[in-house]
Image (cartoon, rainbow, N blue to C red):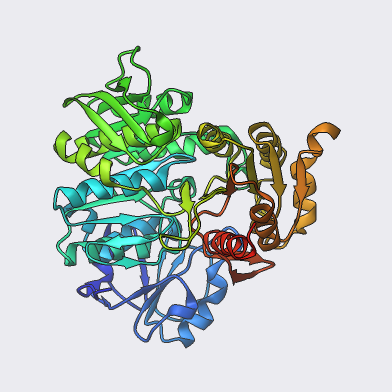
Amino acid sequence: MSTPSPRTLGELLAPLSPEYRGCGPADVVPALAVDSRAVTPGAVFIALRGETNDAHAFVPQAIAGGASALIVERGRLPGLGHPHVTLADTGAALPRIAAAFHGWPGEHLRLAGLTGTNGKTTTTYLVSAMLAAAQRPHARLGTVSNWLVDSEEESGFTTPFPLELQALLAEVRRRRGTDVVMEVSSHALAQGRIRPLLFTAVGMTSFSQDHLDFHGTMDAYLEAKLLLVRDHLKSDGFAVAAVDDHPACAAFLANAGPHTVRWRASRRPEGGAELRVLRTLDDPSRGTAVEIATPAGSGLLRSPLVGAFNLDNLLVAVGLGLGLGLELATILDALERSPGAPGRLERITLGEGSGASEGPEVYVDYAHTPEAVAHTLATLRPRCRGQLLVLLGCGGDRDRGKRPQMGRFAVAGSDLFYATSDNPRTEDPETIIDDMLTDLSAAERRQVVVEADRRAAIAQAIAAAQPDDVLLIAGKGHEDYQVLGTTKVPFSDAEEARTGLLNRLTSGS
């Protein structure tokens, strides 16, 4: 990352009613830190109150690390002798401070934002492919990785926290990027991470139960997502949402400003949606091939992606592309060639020349909500000449309410369900599996194979599958780790699946 031009405390804090003690608005700020362990000599440390920790407790460490000044909340540290500035709410001020420190990069970029329980990652990859086809230097920020104009980088969070986010946007500008497409999570919206950004186009792909451990209720979860269109869309911007199966997506459009453009995306010819399928052209099991109507005219939409949920993603992507000013022909050409995102219904094979000519077909997908599992299984069912198998678990220390639903949807949509671990974190994997199976009848439980060790479960499922079977390994997608206790250990569903297929091949199964 490039180093921003030095700013002064006054430039960063002027509108925030700061009170200075031992420092002043003319003092230069060479760097900012919100983690006392990341403080470098001369940096300004901002103390934030988090969900589990209050960084005001780490002010001594920040001072010891060389912080030249501190930004703290008014009344939190009476008697503090080190140079400091007090604000009413440091957490609320941080996004603006970060944007000002990096020169307000978002104001110089065309921004497109995606929210939704499922589909965010795939859709950002699709829009990125469109921008590349239009030869517009751009960034893609999200769950799998961050693409910054000309190189790929690791991402720590679906939506970065303010200091990192604004630094990334500044780096896009430095690399002469013009556009950014980014996933915007409900956590990020509720926590104000993307303030004060304004987007040219925003989209919502879906809405179903997830993250209730954080939001508490479905209403609060939806309210967080609505903030994207309500507070972060330009007054003349574009809002698009997949409305067929998601009343919440209609609410998303209804919350757009009075002068914004609102486009419904629908798989149904009837209903008059602005982006809609007119007719299906080919066998959907081989991919997507449909004629669509758009505000820019009609055209043939072809894609290697399959399934109704991916058609929703494709239509939302078309709307975002048009909102960003791309030509429809460019959009459709890019979609025909884009494979979508890694770990999103990704077919796992041993490659050409391996000698593997028979099934089972094995897919890795990030589906980790009941609705996503149901949709993905429904998508794979037409491809299956034998049995449809699913392998999945649920994350530990997360929303327990969805675990029985995951079990019900897995059993209902498959012929055989391998119940295993996901990221158990600090919970007992067997207890998590018990939660998943709690609502199943005795007959349904006979459809379940329990193996808490995910590596062993994948090996067992692939070894036991018949050539005409299809196996879906769901829940982790692109992730290359598993969280056991508080430790991340290397683990890739795709690599484990390849190992299973290779063992099957060499053993003559």
